[in-house]
Length: 286
Image (tube, rainbow, N blue to C red; front, top):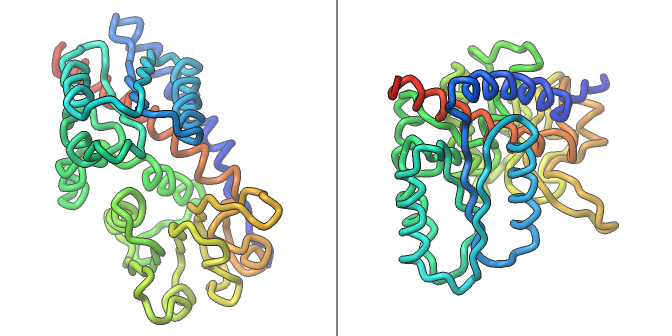
């Protein structure tokens, strides 16, 4: 069998169109959604990510504020700036781009962001809301992965899902979102002795470890949904994921490409989170 590609670009375009419509409705009420992005230092990759986020906001009717600071910025000054943005009613989402310089504690910065403006969904409060099934802002990459899975039309209830990776930003929240969709979830990681034993039983596999060819064809159940979160480079410098795309495509039922799969959805769900925060703010201040 030949796997059907899950087109993250096309799905992203659909969701962003809805974001644009909803943002326009809020703007007409004098409540334009706003996202503040803080970049500390001059990491080239971070600069590209930030530029793409700001551009996406502007293209879909959201107000964006980009604040750039040198790598020498004291932690106290960054925390003070976050506090000021927390108090700004025109800002509905706050994102501090990672990684931060070594002298700044990233978790302390994340926890300083007001919960209702934590559009990355990384704070302890946001994580706790996800774990307990309470409403809240979900981490953008796992949130996007769920939308990609939903686009296949497969009902996850009773399905076996395997998540490869246990990071706080992708692996753990991904597992919790799959549980909320009533899947039976296994989380595998670097200490899992026989990864293939688990993945061969999975109806859904989400690979999020940052290592090429972590998942190969002989490790996949025929017809499975395969979501590739990885971002790597092969010997030729070409962008690739954690999955052997060519081989797994011959076995899986659906698969996300890299690029063009999860990547576009991450920024899209950041827009959705910002919009959701703005809509909630409008309801509570009406």
